[in-house]
Length: 174
Length: 130
Image 1: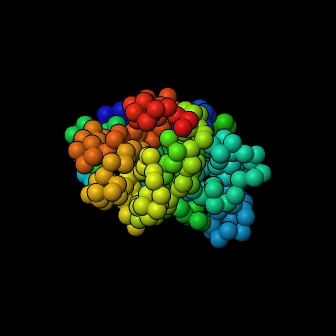
Image 2: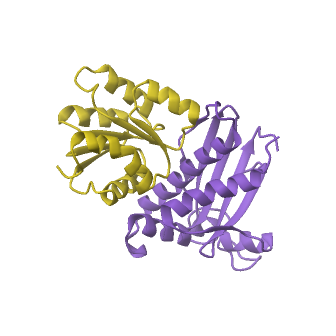
Image 3: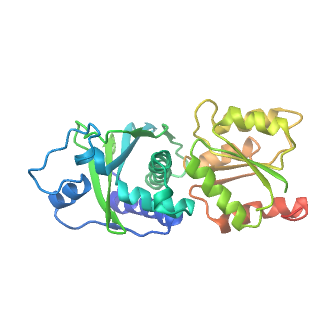
């Protein structure tokens, strides 16, 4: 059983983002529905726009996401979802440029690289020292689609007041 | 140190390493970037290079294959190769060092950690700003 998985994941994400962007990552302890609503850009429960067709409202409008497969020794998948304003802030901090100058391509790359980095740190933390692991290449999800399968674990976090989520699927013994 | 090649499929990672190199005093080096191992191999062959920094997980040619190619080449075998990766652990680190890597660091690398890793190399080459 993986002990302290919550702590290990939070540490992996925090170490990554604090080193890259000098920004603190905290758990979100507020109401879940309110978190998800903010994260997906919905102002009220009745608002539409969850289709993710890039119409600028709902989840696709405010969310950027990337997925990464874990191949060995555990089969699994990690997903990172961040609000667009947060991605812009991190990109501006990493590249040392004004937020207005952050390109879409840079934002895509940042999300992928953050996922790639904390995925490695997380796997190192949960495996034995002599256990090698293999990760796939991060894949950006253009439409920030909701996954069909319920994740095994979901972490709701905040950075500079903005939301991010980490989702985990796979043969992890929790 | 005059010329450094950075191989990583992430623009963010390459920028981050570049900034760390500038902070540790290598701002005068020519820094050339590659998206993957095959591109990096072309770059290190085309001009004398003092240091190759590479990620492991890359498309087309990964970092471990790149390391093997470099160390198998009579002309390039002496090129220091520093691996900076999120996919490393003690077992992988040993494997890479046995293949001839100069060092293995975890992402995200920080300037002090990079400096400590490069110090022996800078000492051998006679300083950072030649």
